[in-house]
Image (cartoon, rainbow, N blue to C red):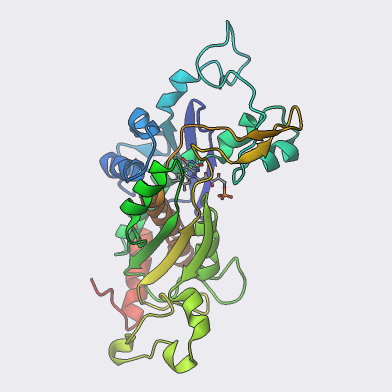
Length: 357
Ligand SMILES: Cc1cc2nc3c(=O)[nH]c(=O)nc-3n(C[C@H](O)[C@H](O)[C@H](O)COP(=O)(O)O)c2cc1C
């Protein structure tokens, strides 16, 4: 079965949900490991006080028994603890009693750089909150939980995925921006070690591993650029300086391709980068138009991060983990965990390649 991920949930609604289907039966999951990834997503310099309210933990509602997957859809939930401040404003049903707490007033001043304007027009909404709640990157919490499960599957076949910030001097940039009530972005890199040659395929965007990774990274809020290997820099180079020559043991002497050739993993480390724009909610609001009056106005100021680059590294790691798990499941199949690992082992026995770690 193909690995699939569906999510639901609003930023200040009761909870975020993910359904991950297509996992083999018998994969052992560790709740602490998933919660540790959720914590990593919340840490990082420049995050807003919301992270202190949330302290995310995963709950599993289906697909797991005594810590082992059942081969049925795995339903993950991350509660929004902040919902207790929004019970009237974000009540799924018509709220009872007098308005109280947050989210009780209609928002008509769309923030540039957010879903507020386009979403309000697209869906014919009377309140931009109805657009911005789902568009919020709060959604990435449950995506990280799903990615963590995918990392467990990958670990069983010796693939390790790790995201890191590559932007230098981030803390200084954040401090300067914070002082001026501004925001910053940055660049993250995800590396996957132990990826065997042969994940993905050649021709279409549905098959090519590079296209799938690019879409996965571009699918994260605020990501505006993606590179595989040396990416944009390759455009400036000569061919003799741009490719990875094949040496002893079929290993490469360089890895400019970032571990993918012709849409297929080539056995080298998979290396991808994502560029994040500066976050669009500023404490010194940008100019907008009030949708009720048509008059110039200042955009909504909602509690917000100065930067979320370190969080993006964790979210991007999860996105890459999902895509690699998806491609590995495609290649090795298996309804049971044992079948999946045995197919991987049989493949390694056939090809002259071994993970280097
Ligand atoms: C982990 C993470 C945290 C984010 N936190 C914020 C935030 O606090 N404030 C904000 O304005 N945007 C934040 N964003 C970015 C917005 O969600 C995003 O820019 C917005 O939804 C518009 O989508 P787009 O940038 O992809 O066009 C965050 C993004 C990520 C990945």
